Amino acid sequence: MVQGDPWKNALKQLDDACHILKLDKGTRDYLAEPNKVLRVKLPVKMDNGKIRIFTGFRSQHNNDRGPYKGGIRYFNPEGGVEYMEKEVKALSAWMTWKCAVVDVPLGGGKGGIYVNPKTEKLSEGELERLTRRFAFAISEIIGPKKDIPAPDVYTTGKEMAQIMDVYGKLAGVEYEPGVITGKPLSQGGSLARNVATGLGCAYCIREAAKTLRLKLRGARVVIQGYGNAGTFTAEYLEKMGAKIIAISDSKGSIINQNGLDSKKVLAFKEKTGSVVGYPGSKKISTQDLLTTKCDILVPAALENQINAAVAKKLQCKIIAEAANGPTTPDADPVIYDKKIMVIPDILANSGGVCISYLEWVQNNMGYYWSFDEVASKMENHIVRGFRDTLALSKKHKIDMRRAAMVLAVGRVVEAFKAKGLWP
Ligand code: NAD
Image 1: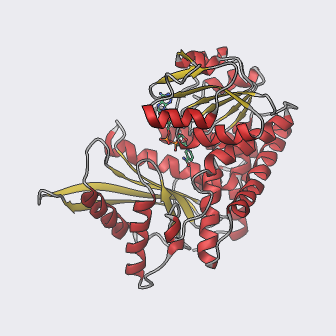
Image 2: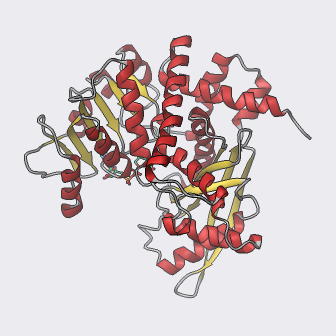
Image 3: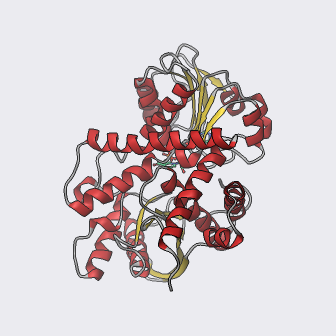
């Protein structure tokens, strides 16, 4: 949840969970700070022959349940390099909780370079030299049993393959696919990785609908954001019988109460650059999209979309947070009072990390599963995560967001206590 100071938000969520779990201050402090934050200087020779210095980070939050896991982003947040360090720390903590909620045996990490490759128009060569320099700089602290990065904002399988290549050569093993996930299939990537977040989100929604005795067949769905997470959530919900009635992207929002064909809307967006103008649909405002009467609202775009004012006008039964941090903290009590079920981001969009985990497992054993095998293993993790969260939400009479944090923090503490402190 990135609003104001992301690090403060992360600590507030942790404190709430520690309070419910009645944890002592020492344990709380242990869980708060990352185990290690590495900040590296990255000198790169640019195409014009001059040297430019970039700054990179890797935050390793917690590894009590397994090696650190989390993305590497190339981004330049408005707050600058110092803000990015705080953001990366907070995101590494959320990775710890996300892995624990769905019970994958990994910890939490996050990293990045302060650079925007899109707006700065770095050439392919500059980007590759930057990526390889970063891989060199963090090579001592990553590894298949230490810390396993993945793609994130503005990084793709291409950068992952380059990092894997640098790591393998430095480690003297040449081929070490388990050091990183989100790789191209030809380099040890996993089937189903591209659909993972949307498919996982659809599984969560199916479980929520069962809990609320809401029939998915004919259920009305609104999707904000039509990128990777949004399109595959829409596609799989449609396969489960739901009707997509409204969709948005950065250019605007559209609605058709009779239903929109998710694949045809995507083809239209790919051809024209936006969902706006799709035949038979009407353009509406973002506010109207979010507050449209529907059964399921899927924010799959940006942070801070649903604040208290928007929450008061919501007319849905389920909110599935495919995006990270789409709901502001002041909206949560309003949503809870309206008895809308929120599937929090750390659960709703955990399909991606589940399949990253399964990619790592396949790399380690050197044997590769079919799409259906990977999807069904991911489904087991997600369904258990949902049910365990729901049980805690009922037990403590708290919303699903707090329940997911209580579940995750409880699991990490259990692992920490079982291992003990040494040295
Ligand atoms: P993406 O870049 O593929 O798509 C983002 C979509 O949001 C685009 O369609 C864009 O047009 C739209 N968008 C941007 N601004 C908008 C606005 N103001 N209103 C409506 N739509 C807008 O990104 P993605 O990978 O789908 O990620 C979306 C969200 O899901 C992010 O919060 C991301 O952190 C989260 N997430 C994604 C994954 C994953 O595996 N893709 C995993 C976990 C979390």
